[in-house]
Amino acid sequence: MRRAVYPSAAAAAALLICAACSSGGSPAASSPGTFGVNATGVVHFWARQATDGPAKALVKEFNATHKNLKVVLHLTPPNDDTSQLATAIRAGSPPDVVGLNDIDVPTFSHENALMNITKYVNALPYKSALSPGHLALATIGNQYYGVPYLADLSVLWYNKKLFTEAGLNPNDPPTNYAQIVSDAEKISALGHGIYGFSFAGDCQGCLGFVMLPSLWADGEHLINGPLGNQTTNVANNAPLKQMLADYQLLWTKHLVPVDDQTQDGLTWGADFEAGKVGILPGDYGFATKMTPTSEFADAPLPGVTGDTYSTFDGGDDFVIPAGAANPSGAWEFIKWVLEPAQQEQYPSLGDTPVRTDILTPAFTAKNPYDAVALRALAKGSVEYTLAYDAVFNEPGSPWFKMFEDAVYYHDLSGGISEGQSGIQSTLDSVKS
Image (cartoon, rainbow, N blue to C red; front, side):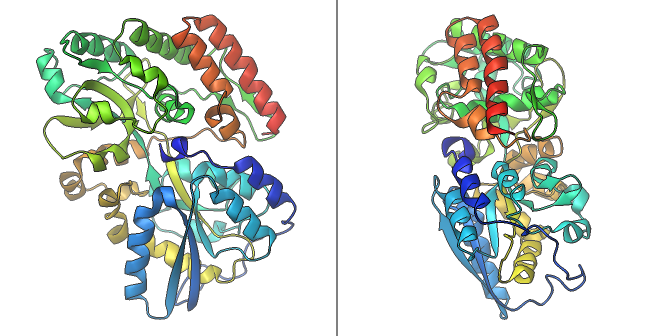
């Protein structure tokens, strides 16, 4: 969600990087046994303001426990993180490690701006437990240019109290879209300003954050194929058509607040937190605004048609820029952050761990909301493309035009047609 509310300047960053990079992506010479072990000196760590919770807390803890290696934190502003990094790389003075928005990683890795850390990632004993979507975005072929740092995941929130009042089973959240619509109808029938469903209807990125996982759960992606030759999967995408039809139904039957059409993401989730909405596809991070009660619960985002689920693997990847002054120190810091003791702190800091192997009974008991997100992480995914912002996040994006036509203007076939042509045209123009 934080990626959706604060779109990055990936396109501008690409222009800056191209002028600066040549052979920066080549692997380092150190062996996994010595690289990132007993490093000394200073590590300059750049993290995003939008995900500063873990950065602030963990840097402070690391510096208190490592006398020979100090991490200096710099926070980049929401709309300037990629351009600042590109400028630093072009100037030959990059930071040692960056918490980079994961969908921006391909832009930098494909310009040889990042260090190839394949052998170090492969040497991690818990590699198979790392977030698959985060890792995929840091991969070119079988080479790794980053590793997961923190997860900002989408889930399905629901109000158990309203479920009970509507005669629904409070322990049976929707597992497909037909059930979402049916449950929303019964909850909306309660009246008194209660709505069955809510969405951020004027936030392009927010909609992608919560809708795309339902397609992935059904085995569909909107963008397929290798970079440079990608194709759009809209016209014959049955789950997408059904999902848009169900959103249209929710809207036309007034099962959502009328203000949803102008909800730009800034107050997204406030109506649910106020107890006025029964079902809300949203961000796990909403949990930090909620007082844990028996009223609120979350579940995985369901597939459109069946009992499957997924999540949007949002959040950040750790990357080491090519030409970093202290890459060994950066890798030592990265490995420390990925240890269970540090990962288990993430829920209290508003994010989800990136290792599924810390999902123990003790973790679940302590973090019931986040345990749902972490369970979904194993089935999470992403759209792998250099054109993500242009397709999904930018104002007037083809993704949003398709949604607008299908849902608000009741033109499903026209929206699908415009989505197919608009997304393909964007992919072609961005050379994604």
